[in-house]
Length: 178
Image 1: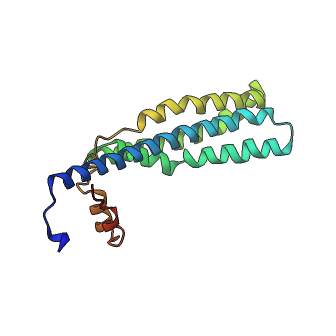
Image 2 (image 1 turned 90 degrees about the horizontal axis):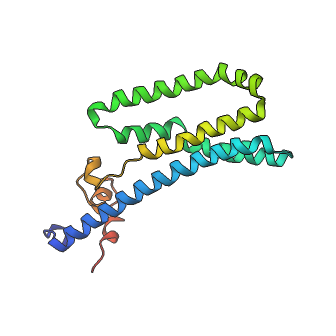
Image 3 (image 1 turned 30 degrees about the vertical axis):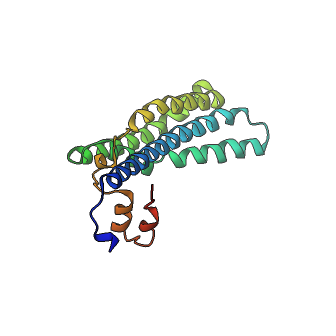
């Protein structure tokens, strides 16, 4: 039986390369999603004061801000924070991030109308867009590149992880011959 055969050094090296490639893809996709979401959010806010037609307002406030918010919401941010901290410090980090996000929302409630009355709604939206844009480098710093999947806590190859997840039908197809 092929499954009972001990893996060769070549197979173990291939498995390690697959793990490193998958880890790189996860890191790169998180980085791209974070940057793109922040830019969409800031861009939508920045284009809202320039909208002269209902369609332009729908595209800026609806589409761009909506897509940006989807990638910068609590679920996404807490996932990034959870991966950035060791298990023994993760609960504290998630609590601080949740409290900080909630406090930010609470802070915007009185400051939004104050900024609108002081600056006008167009300038306030540009200030808000600048604030969101300033968070993009901070979010990029949170997307930490791991050197291997083992750093995340697993010791499996991609095929092993799929087998463990119950995808026995898919895992054998991932094994390629050099």
